[in-house]
Length: 271
Image (cartoon, rainbow, N blue to C red; front, side):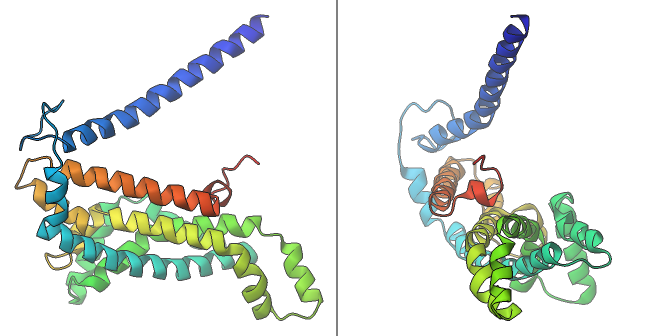
């Protein structure tokens, strides 16, 4: 009886803790959302009158529009390059044994623990020493380095979920390794590949810290443009843009989960 009461108390306290954590995460977003609809040109909460004027300004502001297209270009290139490189490394790490395998894996995953401003500052110094300009190639390279671990993680988990008996059966029927890769392995990895690219794209598009060091006025992405905006203005435009960010990101992830099952890809599905 005593043990059941202790277990019940533990379950209740655990649920309360989860609710508190969710409230801690959601409340700031709720405040930002309500502030975005403020009719006044000052940041105040709660709003006394509501308007959509700041959403219109966020969409029409020139630097935001330029930053959006710059970020879109960088995101597509960085995510696609990271997908090819990350998938290749993930396949090699999963299927082969070779010297310094764990060392290579640690190096590839190191951007997960290295602060982004350190990577950005290092690339800035490297470009200055080498004489390379801070153009789109440098920004794309920085983003590839930052999102590569997430692509690798997604593809590695998908490879672990692949039934290798299918590949062995194809090999026993005379299929070459390349044909097995193209007709068996890659089709089974499609959800992991798409999910890896999607996560890389979201992270790349939202990356700010490293991008601030390696971008210029001509190559600034949307987060950098937002940072420059907040240094000059203090109106709810950024709150409106943040709401757009939240809605679009949530919609993309929801669609990806509905079509590809992100729980299984990320190895968090209990079934």
